[in-house]
Image (cartoon, rainbow, N blue to C red; front, top):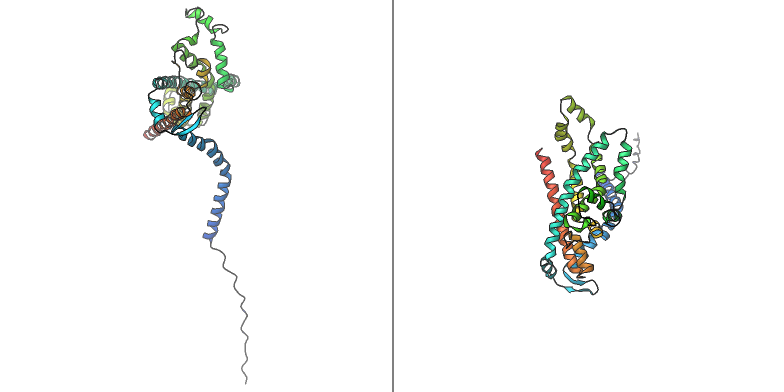
Length: 320
């Protein structure tokens, strides 16, 4: 009896194993990184062209003998810095710039905070007040300086006549003719021009504070002063830090208002650091290398001051 034979079933070849999930994740991550670099490349290019490259050029100029008309004439480090520190106007400009920065910051910040509270709590005249306070911010600082130059003019301005009657000043005397008058006249201009801008920033910070926190404080019996000290100011700290950095940086770089109103006078009493840079580069010495050296020192000072501010505010926040 013959044995029956059975054909073995044909087994189809198994498909190739799919790539591992880890490999897929790596591929997807690489694609995301490339896409991210693609989106960031225009900003990085603009940053390199408009920020990094000018800084490199200024540093090279600061270490070179580089005149306005003659151009680059070789390196001379550290001659520009030595010559800079021997300039008697350097200390005078630094002292005045620091004084002006302290005055504008101390005056401007409380005014901006008070205006923000006024606009936030007002109801009937809310839109009108916001518009009226923000209108000066629409002007450029040069345009505002020209406007106040006309107001301060003893020939056509109305302020000198008012001061003659109220304060008994000399007839025909210019407000900008004395060091103190020129400083305070410029501070008034800056406060008028920037109060609305800083008010807007402060108002955004105030509106970001949850209303439930104030309601809980009122239920607990906290008064206005206690609420301000324990709730508003601590939660407003990031906004305060930003506005202070903007105010201090802008004041240290002040140029337009003093160049238009006083030209650094009388007797160089309102000469700022940036004005000194401009004079060294284009007016008196026409030395771009010397001006670049002062620009590098000013940039380093700004970086250090901003780092100290941020660190101080961060430490204050950690302690509380």
